[in-house]
Amino acid sequence: MIVTFGSINVDLVYLVEEIPLAGQTVLARGSRTEAGGKGANQALAAARDGATVVMVGAVGDDAMAPIALRNLQSEVDISRVVRSKEATGSAAIMIDANGRNMIAVAAGANLVAQSDGVEDELLRNATYVLMQMENHATQIENLIRRVSNHPAKSILNLAPAYRLDRDLLSLVDIIIVNEDEAEALAGWLGCEPRARSLSDALNTGVLRTMGGEGAEAFVDGKEVRVPALRIDAVDTTAAGDCFVGVLAAALDRGLPLDSAMRRAATAAAIACSHPGSQSSIPHKADTDSWT
Image 1 (cartoon, rainbow, N blue to C red):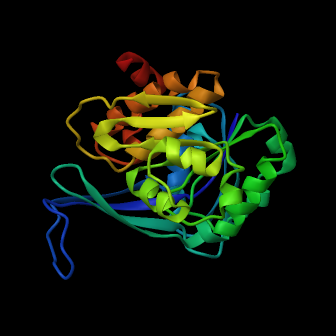
Image 2: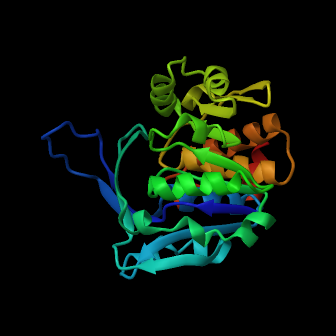
C-alpha cells in the first residue's frame, strides 16, 4: 500500500502557440479545466498502475473541490482528504504548440493539510509514503521524521525545489528531482547535480529525471540509467508526476529499481503523447502494452 501526502488542485489549462513573454498577452486556441496537483496526480498514477493508494490532503469547501476529486474518488482512498475554509488549490497552465508548459500554482487548502492525517496505524501498514513540496514544509518535515521510525519507505519528490535541511533529506529513502531541481539541490549541497553526486552528499538514494534523456539513479550503492522513449510530445504537464507515481507502484509490488524506472519511463511517455493532466495518465494495461 502507498500513502500519498500531497497537493490536490484544479488545473486551468490554456493552449497557446507560444508561451507569452513578460508583459505580453496572447490568445489561447483553447482551454479546459481538470483535476491536478502533484500529490493527486502521483496518487492516481500509482493507483492506475495497480497499487492500493491512500490519499491524505485537503481541499476547500467550494465549487472547485468536486472537480479536484473527480478522478481520485473512483480510484484512490480519499477518506482522509479533509475540507478546509481555504480555497481549493489551483494551477494556471499554459501549453505551447510543442507541448512545453509553464505553470503557476496557488496552494490554497494544500497549505493547511496536516500530516497527522497519516496516522501511525497507516504508517505501520504502508509499504511506501510518497510526498512532494506543494504542502506546508513543516508538515512534510514532520512526516519524513515519522516515516523514518516505521518500516515504510519514503519517497520525496523535491518539487517544486525547496531547501530542506541536509540531515532531514538523509532520512528519505529515495529523493526524486528533475534537472532544474537537481541543479538547485546541488547548489545547496555544493556538489554536482548528478544522481550519484547528490546521493553521496546526502547518504541516501537519489533519482534524477532528464526529460528526453531518460533518468538516472544512485540507490543503495547501485547506479541505474534508463533511456526515455522517443515519442511526439503533445502535452508534458503530468509526465513527471506519472513517472513518480508509477515508479512507486512498481517498487510497491516488488520490482527491482531498474525495472521500475523503465516502467515509469514508459508510462511517462504515454502521458506525454496525450493531452491533459490526469486524463493523460495511463492505466496498467496501457503501460503493459508498451513494455
